[in-house]
Image (cartoon, rainbow, N blue to C red; front, side, top):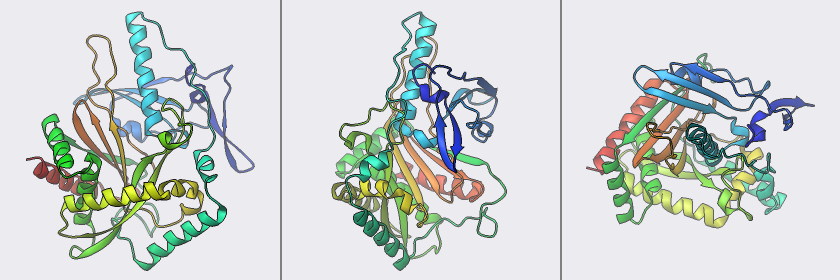
Length: 368
């Protein structure tokens, strides 16, 4: 808490507007919870109106060993700042265990300015208005295919307000083979994984035959593109996503789709469309939801730990009761992982498992 005063805060409300209250002189204490199930932990109710803005639990699972689960509100954290908190936690843990100096420097700013405001200053109101209207026309003229919300009720969320998460895992050899394949094709690993995810999604969409239009969002890290850049250690929701609208045939090759992702993603970054989407976010939240949300957080650095302790895997799980599927791509200890997360208020586990099996089969085929 001393390093991150914001974590001692709490959510409140004034005149219908959300606020974060922080008392740096009287920080709250994080209570270490205990449990036996990751599914139970990610579905636990949050108490962020009482604070603190960090939930941490130790889970001793019969088949998965011991897990440490940290939960933070998405309002002020993205993957990069979450992983920075993760690294700081283990640095402090190691210092305490080994008798070394405990990191105590405070991360500043405690709460930075809204990134959408920073980015929004680059554009006029007219530019943002035209951008939002153009995107709305595109989706109105050519319908976007989405995964059927089989768990919904009367067009709204169903009664099961829990989350499910499914992992697709590639061992180090196959992960290295996938990277070689991508580079041989002048693509990134993210391009190829996105192609696999999108062709896998096409497999479970309706109609089964022909070409459908898919709206996919891909993460763009604006932290390093701002001037000055925002360091990972600063708790800030600085990441954004850029929208890709792709026509995908039922028999599409994942490498061909990867090439399309590569081209469109680069075009959106170069044209400024990625930054404009963040600046116009407040005006776009009611537009068509994406068919798939892909976030690639790259390689997660293995923490330095005391002898006898090792973190075998790290998993980031976005939690939100929204009619969209979240795919988080990461690499840890030379293994490539794809974590699919969904709200059971909208989708059934069977739907997501079918998608995961298709993705796993395709990745295995590409790396054979």
